[in-house]
Length: 211
Image 1: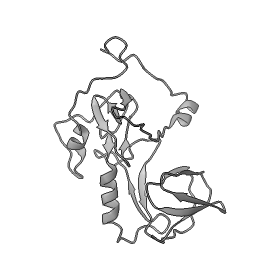
Image 2: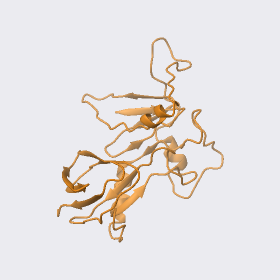
Image 3: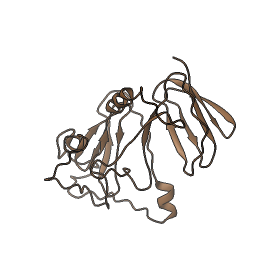
Image 4: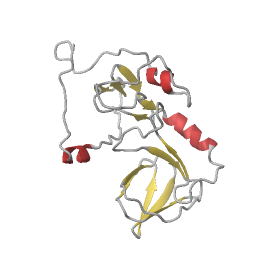
């Protein structure tokens, strides 16, 4: 499957994070013969509460009843511009779409994330989190959205994290492995493809199985 964001077609692979920032035109498609499933994570409840929601489906220049945009940039365009850490092209505008201060980097590859975590597995990490990475806007180092943050977490085989609690809620998606998480005194087992939520200010600790 793919998501086309502001004319940049982002082919999706397992573990990829594809952003559709506010104020950007985007559509989805599947050219294959099998279904595609992805997790759509939105800040909709907060924006609805703040009465900030608006949608625009009147895409300019669309032909007839077409509801998709034409690809205007080569594959991996934003990765070519911003994919090298610490290097930012000075000739390119970071503004894409009409949103305020949105990240111009649309696709974070799952394979790259997995390789980065593997390279860090020998580090001590955080006692409450293990080895973690945060997805950021490469032009300023800030979270990709002001209302949501995304990250990746590695628990090494048999690793147990220390108990903690946070003021924000967290959604976990298990990419591989097995383990368990204790939330407010109740234990939940998890395995590949499971999704679980830790509500705000509930105590949590994680344990991965020996593999």
